[in-house]
Length: 396
Image 1: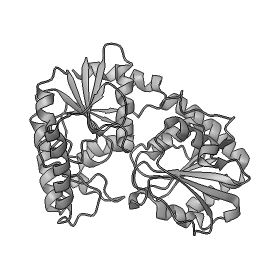
Image 2: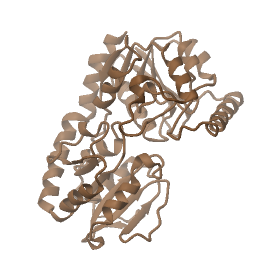
Image 3: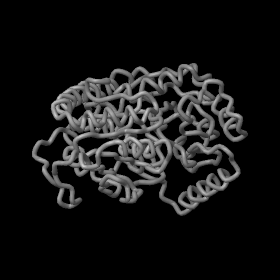
Image 4: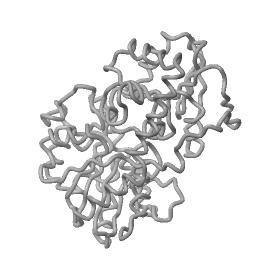
């Protein structure tokens, strides 16, 4: 079976990172040949390619500019993608010899909804956020149920949602049970087979490393202070990521007890009451694994999330997690077993549980052990590979 994965990028952002991991996993399965077509290529993988022409490059830049321009006339402040404009990808896909097309994060005008409705190849969707059950929105606010009604009180979103009614995938793969629920309750995709397959994590990269005492290149060293790690693959100043909630919680804890380590493309001022170690966006997976290992606790204060790679990676490195009970995070964290799940958005309770983890080494170690065991049973490549083998050959 020849599969073509379509994604905006292979490494730029959490969804791209997940799509790339799925692509690599598929190529490890006998009788499957996986390729990936992207707008923005960052890896050296020979099975990932772009349509390399001046026209194609110009078209994508122009379409993206038009999308940004349109958003200035849109009163919807949620992160969004219109997918209005035709793509050079459509002709390539329809003229190819692939057996199955796998649509990943195709926003930023990668492929228009009209293009999708003109596909002549069987296709499935791998969801990475709420966009497929919304209008233009990638995520809505927590407890905003407009996606259930399919009415968004916004011209652009209502129009885009109406166009999605004609999209007919063979199957929809959702990494989280939460997104499975969203699709089931949506009025869209009633004929599609709905499958829950989590993201795969490479246990040869992400695993507990007891020997990591320092990362001299990044000037991170083991000290008496507990290291709390907050990592964001996208924009950490995005309200959905919950940095403001995290700061509120940390301000309630003695700053002499901990240090906050942040990996993000955004820099944060160091005038808080506690110490912040700012890191750049970490592209190297090995280096990221080392950072997880040198840190003690990983926090995910998101207001809404699917199945964040950060949580899966940290858990595979045997790190306790603390997060709000939103989206797919309850798939990852069992409260009181491998971390803490906090009622949204009680920053005081978040602070109390975090402080408990900081002060109780025995609890941290117990959570760490449970986290690692849980990850091996749920996110390891071999486990996820079996799920894909079991499902893919039933689709076509």
